Image (cartoon, rainbow, N blue to C red; front, side, top):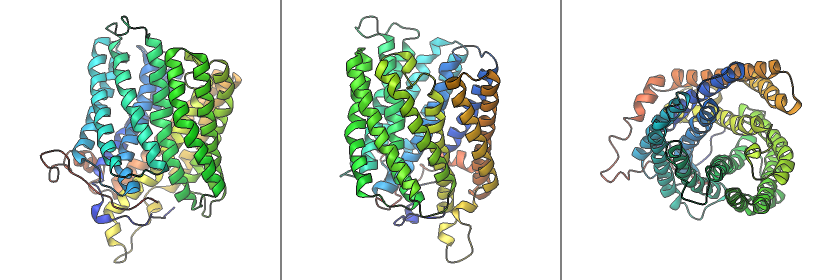
Length: 460
């Protein structure tokens, strides 16, 4: 799709290296995560590989991508300038270095290093929350997307210190003198991370993105459903996390029901917008259909699991056999679909927007290889279906392993497509993005570190 939202001021476009640096590193962690997951399906990996794998995907791929996207598009949606580009670089460095150390420590069972690595991740997340939070403070009154982003930032602010305490507890008995156990903190940490920091961001962004890519207007019924989501989901999640932390099934059950009702209302809105699309299918809308179907399936599977056992490790991600539905079907396809527009859009604005009207320039969709996009979509969908169906229907291990290999190949082709887009059209290619991350803040940040970059625009 070639639609460009109106109101953007290209003269105030932020340095593309900052968000693209987040995206490139996120893509690297994605490759490491899916390849590692395939290896784990075939053989035993030493160390605490399962913990390393989930953090590689959720922090390395999903969270770092969210950090880059918020840094870029909160100013676009809110019409205010980002608080500091220097802090946007600092957050990326701290989280990346900390995550690499954290994963390496888990795989090598070098547990003494985990607190140090966890401290770096904590500081990086605090910098991110502060930087984007200061930006959102100037955007009041907040709209639907901004409210969800603010809620997600609050969850990031809670998740990071809890994660650090869990890392520290590997070597020091942090919770011994308290009434809380490691399991209690783990439940709160995971609940706020999965459904607050990540899913709240997705809910806030997807309403705007689906409206834009489908070119469909919301109806009064859609707005009432979104009102129901705003009533149920944020408050329900806090109750759910509190109930899990306290080990109270009745409290957790009430929160779980509210979360699922809110998400169901949101999913109906997304599906209705996609069904009323006035434009041809695009890489974004095709993947958003997968997201809507996956979220519906996950809600249906999880409803009974959370009602029967809202507190417990088996149902941490929802239904015990539906973690792939959530992580890949919802989280993964949202990120991949969105980046198919975000990465080319940023590059197009940086390189071609000022040439429009003076010479022939490519459209946004011309920047990536559409043949690779179709192949990666087919592979990831087939692989995802097999990976999700395997544990649900007790399919042979060969089916799960083959499906994981297909999904891995599909995700790798997506990464290749994005890197080729940056290499062919970005100034100085991929090397320019990486080196540019550390050069963009030199000339404009003042001594207080409060330099502002603007992407102009107004709320869509």
